[in-house]
Amino acid sequence: MDYRTMNNRWLCAGLGRVLGCLLFVIPLCCQAQYNLVPNPSFEQADTCWPFSGFRYPYDGPDGWFSGGHSPDYFQGPVCAEYGNDVSAPLNHLGFQYPQDGVCYVGVITYNDPVPWREYAVVELIEPLVVGETYYASFYANAAWGGTSTYPIARLASSNVGMRFTMEPNQWEWGDPVPTTVNYAQVYFPQILADTVDWTLVSGSFVADSAYRYVMVGNHFSNAQTDTLPVGSTINPPMSYTFIDNVCVTSDRNGCPLAAGLDDLGTNRLVLYPNPASTMLNISGVPERALVRVYDTVGRKVWVGAARQDLWQLDVSAWSRGTYVLRIEAHGVVHSFRFMLTE
Image 1 (tube, rainbow, N blue to C red):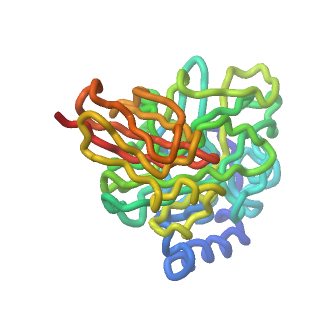
Image 2 (cartoon, rainbow, N blue to C red):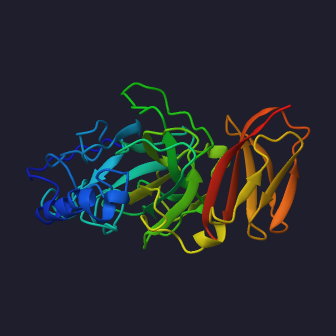
């Protein structure tokens, strides 16, 4: 979003610079050596970015850029006075202390009638390895209130998540509204409605390509996104979400993960045969876990609940091609692809 409020500060924050060094230098040799996301908490910035909206890798937090319109960068006290449009914790979109460090970003996750989406994008430190399991997480918070006379966002939305891509999908001014693909490797299927505390969004997936970028936002259309009012305002229906502390790793213990992931761990979950032709067998699925299958353009093909640890899905009448199977249990999502052949 482009709200232009100038300030004469330097760097994200004095404390932020120290924390940024700890978060950016130590990770290369210590705890975040497992985190493939550079500048994961948005602490590193070349200068104090004077606007809330950013588009290019060095407009705002180092390395991060826009995959849709202009995500916002909210900065610590040395860069922005309390209550400034670009400040954390109080800004024009809400009040929230950072989950980590002194900075965070925010994106539009629902808008009506124009289906605007904003995505914060970054290139991973190294590409994902095909066939390897990755664990991913971030913290999210539904924005409400802020310094605007009338709150800008009045809805909370579902499906806030992470999509991994081969291309950067850099958004340029004048480009059309980004097309939603109704798919993300990791996302929060429920309405993310907590305006007070940060919500941990996490999951695991098997990389089917050597993905180089991660896009954070809502990758689902308005028709597939649920919303809930968090307050009243004269502004049009819009949902806005704060994002902090983004993590991607192949180490099971490398990222914060929601409780229950062990119940959906890749050490138990088995899908076979792959490719399949008539029957797909799935074992290790928690009972009553929600199972969804999508085609390659994001259309929902099948949905149901797991009936037992080992069960079968009749795919004999389905079109031949590639599908995505997603299993959701205990607030955790696991996804991988399978193929149908003759």
